[in-house]
Length: 203
Image (cartoon, rainbow, N blue to C red; front, side, top):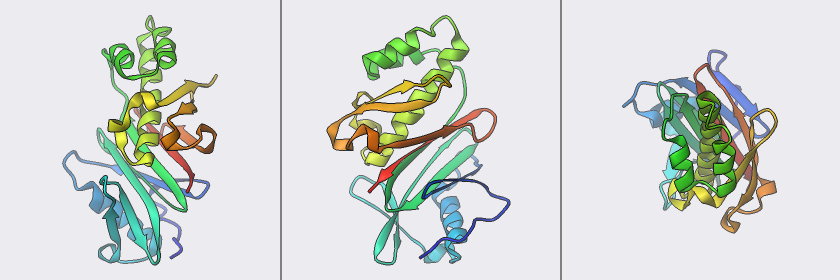
């Protein structure tokens, strides 16, 4: 199965082998149905013909012939974000940018000490603190979703730094996730008011 190009009206991007898309979303809407329709467009198949299965931890994947296409999606506010690719392991997160008065307290409880120090240095600038926290949170969630256990595996099991432009990069992770240098992160603002992160590595 080889995917075709998505419709021109779709908000979409491609990072290496990974295809991403995002749409308006109404809270309570069936996100899987929207993702299924997108996959149907990619593979030029009726959505009902696509088999979306889940592993023992509830992680979705697309059964495509004799192999699996990795698949993940996330929604926040009024946006839904999804990604798929063959021969990679991937996870995504999207977050609505909003005030987070408990950001530093959450970091002290769940983040690595180095990340907490990074945020504490921005404590006098609420906008900078919110921005840094959201970018770290999205990066953590994307990698942990790619791993398959999600946040329950432990936010402290992955440690990130922010580069000079404020983008996250993975500097250390639990051995169960493989080597930190094998992971690629793509993070951007898909629309004003939102931040999205894709984490992926070769399978």
